[in-house]
Length: 274
Image (cartoon, rainbow, N blue to C red; front, side):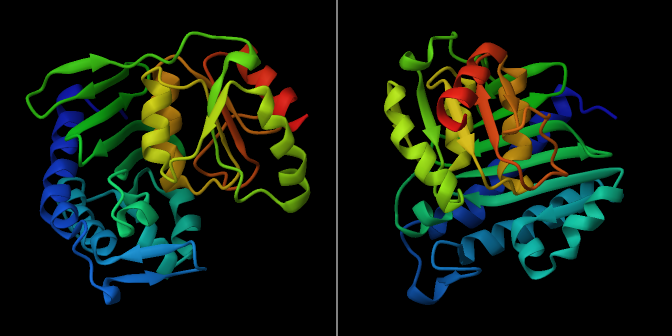
């Protein structure tokens, strides 16, 4: 199964319209009761997350009635959806507001992430930036690009490879187990610089457009990574799990390292985790 570029643009338009209707009107206007915790104090959900997921689920279901829709908030209510995803011929995996902590705190760094998965393989990915009003789109085997509402496109390309000491990376170490965290943190000084946006959507966008070299994640829920890994790959990058195996949205553990090329991945793996 494949998406055409025209169909991908239509989906990008759907993400944009939903962001304008359900997300942006609530930005910096949330009441205290509009923000709640889920699994812990760092795991937030807002009225915007839930409203956007409802709207996108309805719209995608209308356009693709045979598809399964796996939204982050629906999966929080029914974890069995993650298992049922394995049997779906076509599944849309949705993060309605990635970077919820930023959104809830009034920080303008959040995005809408969507992946189309066919029998467990990601075939299309979208990351919409509501504040910048554009969408990164990738189609498997056809590249990745940033698309404006006008239809103007700019191709994505990862940064040129550099030695470990020249790399800038988004290193998400907060979900590492304590022993691995203690091992990793002193080694970050080997890199030229590090950052953490608290938003995988913008970290993947930056990596796919050459703004940084490295991404490291431990927590691998599919709504955070399925779209981003495909976008990064179609922009020319290389990624694999900590043990060197290929990423799949079916895998939710095992960590992930992304780099401009295989040699850079090996240097990151050995330098930070070896």
